[in-house]
Structures are given as structure tokens and as C-alpha cells.
Image (cartoon, rainbow, N blue to C red; front, side, top):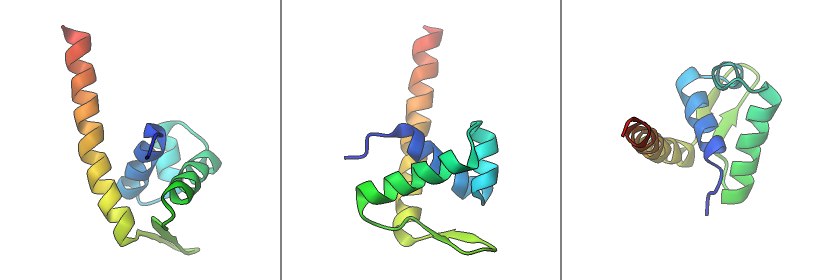
Length: 87
């Protein structure tokens, strides 16, 4: 079971920004921490989520699937939190 919402936010930020550096800046964490979040998530799931080369990265099929599901879940979580805070 995935328990780390921060790791899922990191995955989505990497997919959106196209790089670990961009995601780290947007999340206000170090690039090393972003990399650790993804490594931990990959280890927990036992699959590779991101194909990395020196020039670019791309999501694997599993990475694409998890990113889409995470985006939906995180949007719902953020909306629910906003609703609760405003009531």
C-alpha cells in the first residue's frame, strides 16, 4: 500500500515539470530529496516509474498510470481540504 502522499506529489510534479530539478523547485525540496521520494516509491511498488537518461526522462507505463491516478486523488484531497477549511 502506498502511504507517502509527498512521493505521489513529487511524481506528479516531475511529470508536469519534465525534470527532477523543476519538481524540486516547485515543491521547495532538494533535487536529492525528490530523487529519494521516487526511488522509495519505485522500491515500494517494485516497478520502475521513470526512465532516466542524462538528457531526458520519461514515465514508464506504470509511471503514467500512477501519475494519472495520483493527480485525480491529490486533486480530490486538495479540494476536500479547502472545503473543510472554508466551512
